[in-house]
Length: 348
Ligand code: UFG
Image (cartoon, rainbow, N blue to C red; front, side, top):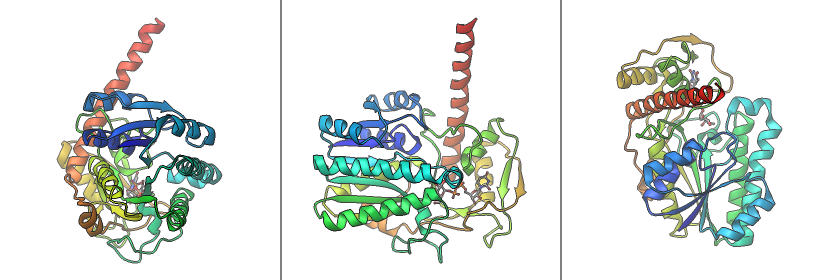
């Protein structure tokens, strides 16, 4: 089976490519390198022994997608391409709506023209908005999201549902991710955002390696176990495997299916800090700060549907994810130092 992975050099995309290759799929990656690096392709090759075909393309381009689909004959698409920074999306809503929707329109048009029947979409628990109750099952109401980024997920889910209604021959998996964290055990793939990270684990990683001084914990007066926000943190390698299982499901022609991908366990910010310290032996200095606008107090997944219908079960826990994330961050820092040194030698 030949699979197009858009955004395949990004954090979740690159881990999914590894998982697909390990399970015998042929993979073609498209990425515009907006938020990713070519190093990820080298990492994928080192881990799997295969260097998948790579195209540096922008998925918003209808003509580029047309050309690509004409040449490649895909059986399935996994779409990771898209902007994903919640805070930035509030400041630049038009960019988010235009980019994330245009990517889907270009892909859907190409799917239609070249009769590609299987599509996996990276959605997010953000579509549940402020939950009435937890754990969140897949039939919990989809609400107004708390950011334009989240709203693009709601909109694209809606478009997919309308398409599936009329195209019974299509198979579509909507995967709602909870909080993906961690990195590949090899230290070759992981998440290293430019600048100050918005998300908890990337921030903690930078504190752990000494790049940032201390963590701000946003809010300690929520109605949760210790007053700090509770989330469902899933190891990115588990999440990646979820995509392989979703593709297998699509091979049975199920039409449109929706699954949560989470662990089913809620962990507070303070619990994350403690797990990180235990797993790595590194102390994480932190201070309490006011609540962050748009944050929900608590969310975690109901996992029964994915377990019963896909056979999906997480193999790693929060400490595994903390340790793998830390090791990746250390290795990445070394790699960046080496690159800088090489640059200095060249200019001397
Ligand atoms: N947090 C801190 N300090 C930080 C960063 C985060 O205390 O520096 C807290 C947040 O307040 C929250 C928890 O850590 O309680 C997790 O925050 P993240 O930013 O890591 O993750 P979110 O749950 O806010 O966001 C994630 C994804 C989004 C997705 C959203 C909803 O990153 O893409 O879940 O599903 F939209």
